[in-house]
Length: 148
Image 1 (cartoon, one colour):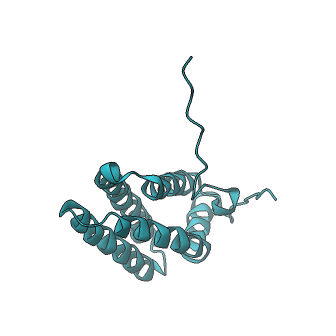
Image 2 (cartoon, one colour; image 1 turned 90 degrees about the vertical axis):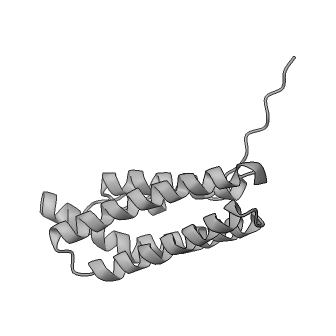
């Protein structure tokens, strides 16, 4: 009789509190959370693969938001874009360390920092962008229900 491994509890999990009310953004953010969690939970042998998956996601994610901002004249675009560029710079540096055979704990440290950074970034920067995008497309602010 084979035993199924016990499901692991995510260290970083999507919650309704992260929802911005702009579905394209919410889907991308959910993927962000899943990929950061994958880094946190990764075995050393798969760490480079996890970092590469996150880096690919982050490039697409941040480019999409930059396109929304620049394409619609979002007032705080440059500040938001600069913050994304700083994150990508860190990811590239960590990827280089791991690829050169460095300690994989640096990747877990990066993921832990991303886990701390994300809620504030979404609360202040992404929520403003989500409201901007919904107002442009629907004429009002998004309505978001958060479960207790």
